[in-house]
Length: 513
Image 1 (tube, rainbow, N blue to C red):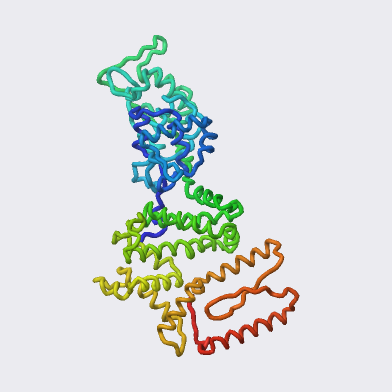
Image 2 (image 1 turned 180 degrees about the vertical axis):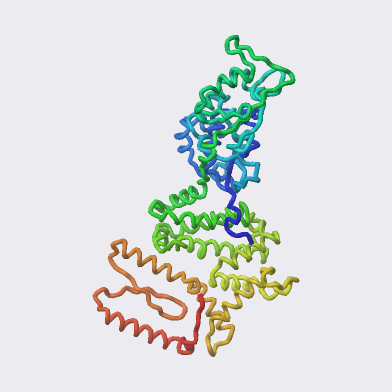
């Protein structure tokens, strides 16, 4: 099973072929539509969803409301944009992890959203994209001057109508530090003082008469590239972070107070799911995130305080109490052939996808979830032992059913209650799993409440008493009691607890979490 970021998780990047066609002039498109794509690319999620509000786009690009609507309609007609569930979706990107072998993407450099590019005329904008897309950004590529403008002898960039217009655009980009040009092996950039003269002389252009010597056969080859300084100034994809903030705000969670290292923990969960299951993995993460925020709201901030450099209880809560619950439900639905109209269930009807899901569940789930899955399968008359027997491969590492069955069997075996039948013992363990004891769910809830009381001025506080082996009951503590009387209460509670479960020797119970 693929691990997190084994080769770098893929993110949305510019579709190089698309922007080459725009730069070459093969695709009719307005400057505002190009600007829309250039500006929103950092906010395009792995499934294409754009986490950038229309207000933000209008403000950044100085567009009126009706102008933005026209741009969106134009991009939809070109098949470069769609809309679903109130979100815009990009079709102008590809997914890449940025490996050099991948030639289908174009690096997103900050220069794309500079004023010189965004607010230039359409021809300059197209020409910049043409140079950026016909080679890897920052790498020189051979091209003839005659191929860069429309002329009678050679096929060129049709929207640049003359040599003079080409020079006007090219010289400006070189002077402003956007392009580097090589002529006869000599480099010319924004520090060069003689570039224009050398270029005209090389191309046979007479600056006095305004005439250029041209030939049907001979071409004037140069090399051209985006300046390497610009190539290093890259805009990272921010969609996953913006997605987290967007949903947090929907449930009034003030995410600005969360530790800066917290959101990357959540993003790692999404990345691993995407690496395993593609856009379906993104859906799984997104559903769990919304469920977590909806159920916990401001408690997410308190969960975040229970953290160290290696983990955060906020991300653990998402994983343990929401994502694993969804994965468990999918496993049951696939095996029981229920809810088969659901697109996610349909995806996991595939044998390989389902095998990866089982392995993911075994790796990530707590003892609590494994026991609950065993019970849910049993309720559907599905026995793990039968699934193991049906498989021809009995190798533990290769057979996901053997692996899962072994894990669940180990949990039952590591919780031993003397003088009790196996079935009764199994029922007690399952009850503990339902109450979250095996996953320490109660500990997280209680710790969160204690943090609230330390940070927020509550009028009264609560302590938690164990009433019996199956449940917890909250009662108000007398704030005037001394430490000694409190200790007496705890001893009495322990005595009562022991008497209620006198059929069980508590000392013989061992639990491995």
